[in-house]
Amino acid sequence: MSDQPLLMVEDLRVTYDTPTGIVRAVDGVSFELGREKLGIVGESGSGKSQTGRAILGLIDRRGRVDAKRLEFDGIDLTSAGEDTMRTIRGGRISMIMQDPKYSLNPVMTIGAQIEEAFTIHSDASAKEARKRTLEMLGAVRIRNPERVYKAYPHEVSGGMGQRVMIAMMMIPEPDIIIADEPTSALDVTVQLQVLAILDDMLTRRGTGLIFISHDLSLVASFCDRVLVMYAGRVVEACAANDLVNARHPYTRGLLDCLPRLEGGHGDLPVLKRDPTWATTGER
Amino acid sequence: MISVEDLNVVFGRGAKSFHAVRNVSFEVARGQSFGLVGESGSGKTTVLRALGGLVDRVADVDGTMTLEKEVLIGKRSRAFRRRVQMVFQDPYGSLHPRHTIDAILSEPARVHRLDRIKERVVTALEEVGLDASYRFRYPHQISGGQRQRVSVARALIIEPDIVLLDEPTSALDVSVQAEVLNLLMRLKHEHGLTYVLVSHNLAVVAHMCESLAVMKDGEVVETMSVEQLRSHQPEQPYTRQLLTASLGYDRAAIDLFEEY
Image 1 (cartoon, rainbow over the protein chains, first blue to last red):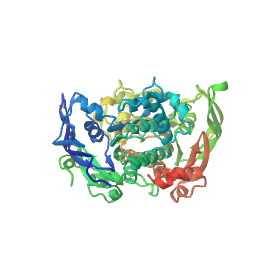
Image 2: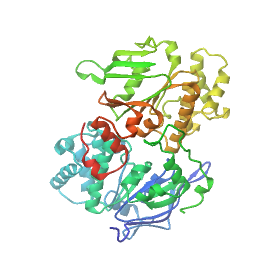
Image 3: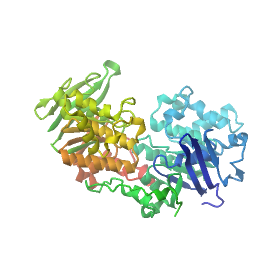
Image 4: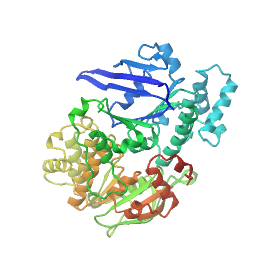
């Protein structure tokens, strides 16, 4: 499906000056994203979230973002002004965060929040916005859109809150969605149901997805392609269904240390970290 | 060793009351690990807390819980608290931020009027793979995995027989999870401990336990051996769905999911 890449990232770096020295949160990451589901996996602190945030210019002032190339649809994101970024953010590239409890506005109804996401990037009438919002709530399989439209975030469950977030991020019909652990706070069955809804919408509209997660088996089964990050670098890139045959010792270590249903009660293999992983890039 | 029969836990009174645990029964033999599995809100943690005597003040607890011959009701005895210890889910929230590791580990030993406290602290740290240099650090100076090791050391310093584990590794990265699970298994063998483990992760329970109960809406859906789980032979459709879901994303399988 991927013809022209939607997003090109080359040698992306995010650095923080701290009293104890320079922290390289992202240290030379390169990839291209087409109309596909790209997974970025790694442990906490590997730089996966920082990579996602850097694309949208969401790194706070203390951090510095550099890249040889950070290009979306012919727009150079490194030099784009705040005005340009504002039209891209939410409108053409949107982001789904981990926890609906913190990412939805607690004092605004769900309907008003989704409508806002729509009207801010278009000049539709209030009536049109309301109609689209209700359609969107139906599309993320909320059974009673009218009720949820009027509800406040605390009145819905976690799974429903996450579906509301997906509705809000999809309504401006973006080209790319960056989802940062979008379902990690949910129970496993609900998690899969929410992902199925997202998956169907992406396929229908040809949206590209960057799926940031710590869950290797989920990424392997959900995404098309996977980048494995360690200490700010991509140490391995492969097709998702090929992740089980990963060659990098870090990826292998992560896969091996998972307890398995069929395994015994014996000791789990423990990941032995090699300092050279942090200095050598993709194999 | 532990027997729970017809346990009911109700929070609140009247119209606003919430029946969190309904008629739950199970038994755990000495030296075994028993798993309580379920999704959020299924009541698994409440069962564990009821066993530990942590809900009597805030809820109505009904049913019979026994530890060997001792009937567990209301405020627990000091002897009970010495025998039964708990490890909580969140290593960031369960250690006092302004107490050193030394203070955190000494406190239970002092409460139970043990001697040679300093020696015990050092031994407890060694047992969980931390050296004595950690004694005078604060929780914020160590990693999440190290904090969970400290939580385990705090539980073990008074030499309990039974440890109640509430999602002990769900806040940790998988590589750290493996280390903590290995540690818990080693300590169980060395000290002949009995575990009751609450987890939403079927693979973790399969790894740690010999038998388990699957919970849903406060009730036990089914109790089974880990072999039954491993051979993908649960009796209840709810458990089978949970098992399918734990295997990863399968678009076709998700359409067959039912609401329970």
